[in-house]
Length: 334
Image (cartoon, rainbow, N blue to C red; front, side):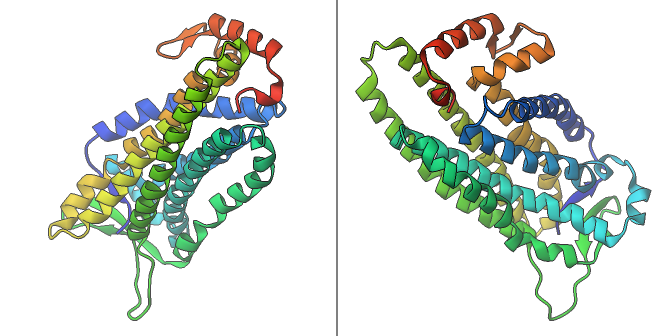
């Protein structure tokens, strides 16, 4: 029992479109700016941001055939003509990307921890750790998902004669991966590990600030404010991924209840907007607030001077000019 392709209420579907379309556009612009300006965005934090974007983007695209369209009655007949292999790929990517997002969020938090513990050696450490982090992010999820590609998928009509789910034919005596179970295990592991990293980061950050709170060095204080905002960004994206993880734990728990079909379907139907909020909206929009380094070129591209809750472009530009004069580029926006 995997995804819900339900011909049901429009509100979750419409809500997901309203919040996801502007967010994915902003996300693409941010990553494009980083890729086209590698010298400005060479720190490990931004490289990890780019790595997470690709899993989020693929997850967003594959979620349309996986969760969204047939839920509102779109392309139902077309789905019945799709090959089992195509359905398997769609199913695979949904769960693969969930595991990858958990790992990428964990490494972003780890990046913030090492910056606080080893501020002077942070760049050198992540010069070697970054390739390993990206390799782990994209290879480990395969252990829990690659067998899905060999399953024979089909559309199964539920008891209500209205809702379809993706399922696969099972051969008696053969062992199959329970994707929702592994998603729940991944979610619980993520909560424990990243929760510990957050507590450690908060403890080290407060202790570090106490030692430097009387500093009168303007440049260092502004640099510290930048680091603080990026650390807050890591916390916010952790909270978002935590919410998404709890959603999958709830989805798995619903399969254990007697009336599981109705509860599972009611839960999983909320998947599109939950996924969009956690993997697109918050990562993209909070970065605009957190990093003046990305805010200025994005403002310039969209030809705006101010966005609500984010800030004023002119103020950002003036602050950036002060920092660029007083702080070397390899220390800025780490």
